[in-house]
Length: 154
Image 1: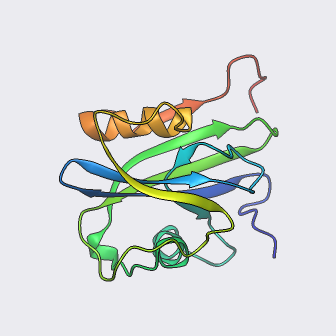
Image 2: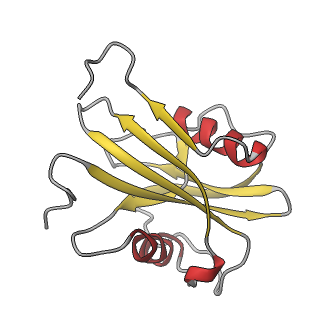
């Protein structure tokens, strides 16, 4: 399946599950991207799928929980130039309620699921995820650009 939508631009979604001032992070493994570092529930938006549908699908696929659209809170968008010369438009959401028990549904891609204090994130967190979670805490920056230094404008 072609996950580029629209052509030339990759759209990704991220979900920060938050409870008691802690966020759920997933430690990546065997993915070829930031393995050994913590990130959020995340994935590409697939063709003919809305951004909200993608967040809900990824939450179910990666952690086994069910989320309704009304439980999602948008908090940040980012245009990102990745190390593999792809351009991403990333949408970040948070949720403080969901249905089901959180489980690691992709152990081949995730070596750890753990809760971390939002103001004390691990050293081995993906840098742009750290920056975005700091935006979540401040709730004042809703858009950012990442990775464009030294790259020509596209």
